[in-house]
Each structure stands twice: as C-alpha cells, then as structure tokens.
Image 1 (cartoon, protein in one colour):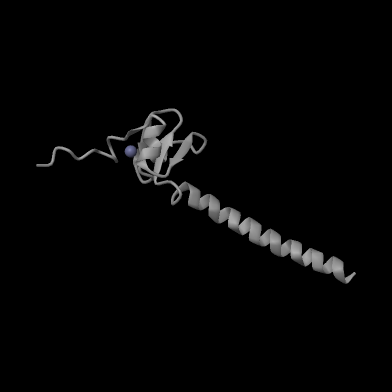
Image 2: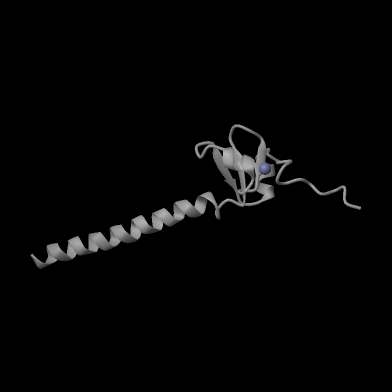
Length: 89
Ligand SMILES: [Zn+2]
C-alpha cells in the first residue's frame, strides 16, 4: 500500500510541474517568443505591441524570430510599427 501512495504523490508532483511549465510556455510564446508577429491572412509582419498585431486572431497569428525569417516567407514590414527610416538626413 505504501507504493500506491508514493505513485499518487509522484503523479501529483509531475502533473504540477508539467501543467505549470505548460502555462508559462504558452504565455511566453505569445509575447516574448515572438520578436515579430504576422498573420496568415496578410503579408505584413509587426512588432508584438503594434495595434495591428493585436488585432490578429490567435488562430491566424504566426511568429518570426527575426526579419530574415519573415522576409523568407514573403512578408513585408508593417508601415505603422516597422517604418523604414531612410528619409533621415
Ligand atoms: Zn504593425
């Protein structure tokens, strides 16, 4: 009977660790994991804090770790949050 208790205890510990790390991973993926955010329904990519990025539905949202990755997939920078600064004298 002792081993049953032990298994139960271990299960609870493993479950606790597993569910905990799962939650933090999900939270990190939406904000910190995304350097740039794009939508599968458009060809623009944004900074996560961009108002347009926030309008993208989680189902349509995709993450890019850098500009190269976004460009390789045919995405162009958003004019609101990723304005290319070339006009500066
Ligand atoms: Zn934007």
